[in-house]
Image 1: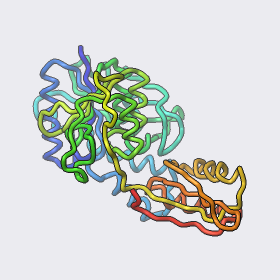
Image 2 (image 1 turned 90 degrees about the vertical axis):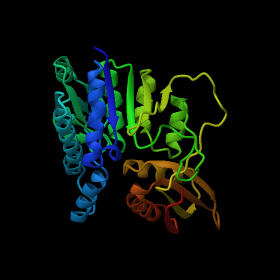
Image 3 (image 1 turned 135 degrees about the vertical axis):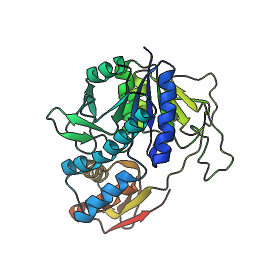
Length: 338
């Protein structure tokens, strides 16, 4: 049986009406004779709401407990979608990451998949059931619930497609596919019918949010074709694979509003200053997207770092500590610099 892995994002599943619409699309694919595995994200902005709830209780929630809380969002979606599919006359069953056999390392809130034990999924597919899998989550070898970080549902879908031998992984989203620019900023942005893994990684690294970069890297390693399609309508979307027939010099333009700039001013000049600060940020779980330095006053250096806005508070705290340690004079921070 041909197996198709589909992934639906939170916007595509944000309301009961959208869940029913997605269920109809899935049932149509199942009736065409395909084995269907569906990976779902949490509805709408559920994850952000849960994160906000945690931070209203404690400013720095323990990562283990955060994983326990945040995985609730996908469990709600998987159950509702399974109900909707069954109401349309098709058999379906929902699984958590743990029930799906997604085994990860022990890095809470940013775990990596070690292996997938997909026997249970295969048994359900053999019974002609649609299998709904909660994205973004797994279980460690120590039986602890873990999450895969931002965009983790994309990683779940790609990893399952590889494990199940699917030829293609379909990513359904609220846009037509990969566009040459953000249509909210550039009204004339065009759909790219195909793009390479490397080009997609460049766009993702520069702020395009359609696909999580780790999922693209995983697909590239295993030569799995990705197709980004609209969840509403019948658009063919964008195919992402090894090579395309034509390679234009410029594929697309991106911008990212959810980034922040931090500067460590008047750092005493030392060959090790930059590496020490970057190491401290990395140890705190802050991903530095770009960094640069320039000459400061009185034989000092100014160090600047671009980070995700969600990491701003942690990064500011780390830089304040580093400033005291190395004798820097000032820490500056600003949001929305994309």
